[in-house]
Image (cartoon, rainbow, N blue to C red; front, side, top):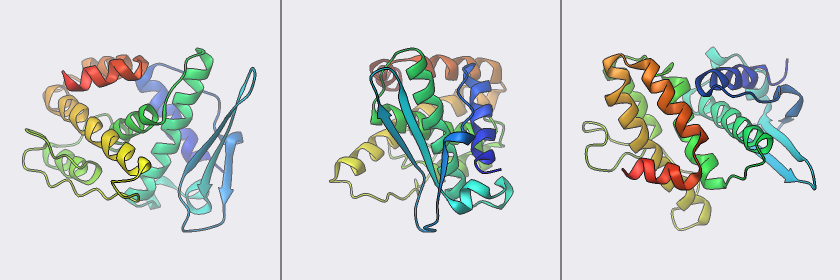
Amino acid sequence: MTGEIVARVVRALEGYYRVAAEDPRPFVSVHDDESSREMLLVRQGDDEVEMTLVLPKRLATARWETLSLDERCQVVEGASHFLMVCDRARGDRSTTQLELELQAEVDKWVVLSNGGRLHAAADLELRDALYDADFPGSAEGGTGVCKYLHAGNTPQGERYRVANNLAARFVHRLSTGYARTGRHHEMRAELSKFFRMTQEQKLRTVAA
């Protein structure tokens, strides 16, 4: 079924954060352009929020096992955005593009690491692929090989870079402080608390 792969990721994230969203499958729209990428369209009405999650056809109908890392990241990003907009709308709370991108960058690691259950070397390799981790003590010598589609001097490019760097810091803390020592229950509590924070609270938490 179209969008089943997104629904699986949404359900996984619901479990981590102890929240609930609508079934995303009716909201998925397929784009036939194979060069297109995931995109969540949101329109705020007087008393409702309308959403359409646009996915390239290959992502909307493929099996998870057949997707590349980049394609899996697009699926997680769409699922993450969908879940956060549903949660914020249900609680009559606002969100921003930066907060959406920050949460999605964290969610990529959460999903792709199976909740931080990778061995140390594999986890470091994943974080190197996901994050431009250029900060003191970031990833034990990691290279930060992620790539951006927008130039750094554009609003989109700046937002993605800020979100990516912030997520790298937070995920580094989760990985080294919780996952590697087997403190997964505590890590889930930390993730759940982070999800519910306002953007300002998240920024303060990452900077601490």
